[in-house]
Image (cartoon, rainbow over all chains, first blue to last red; front, side, top):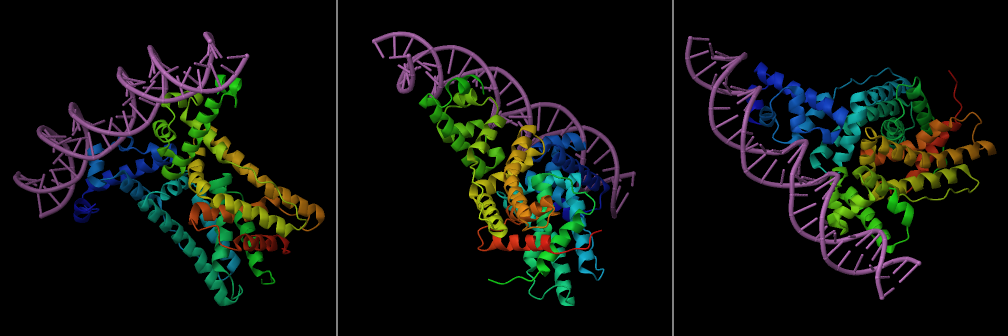
Amino acid sequence: MGDIDQRRHGCDPRVARSRSAVLEATGQLLCEEGFPGVTIEAVAARSGVAKTTIYRHWPTRAELLIAAFRHMSCDTPCVDTGDVRDDLVAVVQGLADELGSERWATALPSLVAEALRDPGFAELHSAFVAERRQKVLEVISRAVERGQLPADTDAGLLGTMLAGPVFFRTLVTLEPLDEPGLAGRIVDAALDGMRASRVPG
Amino acid sequence: MGDIDQRRHGCDPRVARSRSAVLEATGQLLCEEGFPGVTIEAVAARSGVAKTTIYRHWPTRAELLIAAFRHMSCDTPCVDTGDVRDDLVAVVQGLADELGSERWATALPSLVAEALRDPGFAELHSAFVAERRQKVLEVISRAVERGQLPADTDAGLLGTMLAGPVFFRTLVTLEPLDEPGLAGRIVDAALDGMRASRVPG
DNA sequence: CGTGTGCGCTACGCTACCGTTGCGTAGCGG
DNA sequence: CCGCTACGCAACGGTAGCGTAGCGCACACG
């Protein structure tokens, strides 16, 4: 970091070109070969950017990978239709679309595995999770305020019941996520579970 | 495989000793260092077994790793209390205990990541998932037969709603799984979602 | 007690990747 | 147009791990 980025960030077109080419190549390699396939030399070969140049921008392989992950993230705005179910379906569907994309479906498992050992990746991972989790919690809290959900709704549990199945399919069963109506069924099942009256204790 | 195993499997105590020492060391390294940390040389160093001996038993790193994974699996029998909820709680709790163990919690993400690229690991992974999934499906189908669940219950979806949150916590949020009552709450939420009457279409 | 066989050890050549250096060049910005 | 800066290139020594080979030893087995 430092010198180059701070002084000329987005200024010199040569810098911009190198940066984007490298990050793009890194993302590709990450998907195709997985984490161990992302060597500096492989990135250099694919991107057409010299190895030395890569080192000038990212002193560490980890920093490069983290930058690449950030580069492939894109924010989707939060919807507010007024109806809980519609909102949740939209959020869950958005999550499914994102995780179902080849990009994340192949890269996320590597990120998870790495986050268990490297603090830098752990931070990145938790940020990734938190961003997406927050959308769900926002919708839920709105619904509680409107009285569409019980006041004592366990937002954390509901969030888990919604996001869990989506990640489950991505990371565990490796089933496709583009199945029509999937998001709706997950939301229905989770919502009914929350609404049903249960005897406490 | 082949020669040694088929002829003297479990026979010569020297073989048995080497095999178990190597598999144990491999499992340890897998947890501590992750996938890339499992090099033949590292396994040799930790196990005290010579590198050449390791190659004699497992010609490939992949074969060694697969054997190590199989070695750390242990079957838990399926319960049948007569009550859906109790059965499901037991199964979910068992899953949570297993995945929450340091062993699997640290090794599973690596397995998932590897399964995306290597057919051998993909097979191992799907076998792992299928074994655990089958227990859930078994309980569900029993409950349907008894009329404790609707006949048109979507067993696959219910299974996903049950297992999803557990894996979600292990692989994504990295929250602890030993929270008391967690399994019960997940089962309740999922079951109520299945029992609630919904307007189809 | 012998024989066979599994094991340990040392050493080997080989490959891939690391991270750095020096230098010449090209292109951006003033 | 000129100076600065980012880039490309080639080469470097160093490291880690690979997979193999040969040999002597010790232990299991009959």
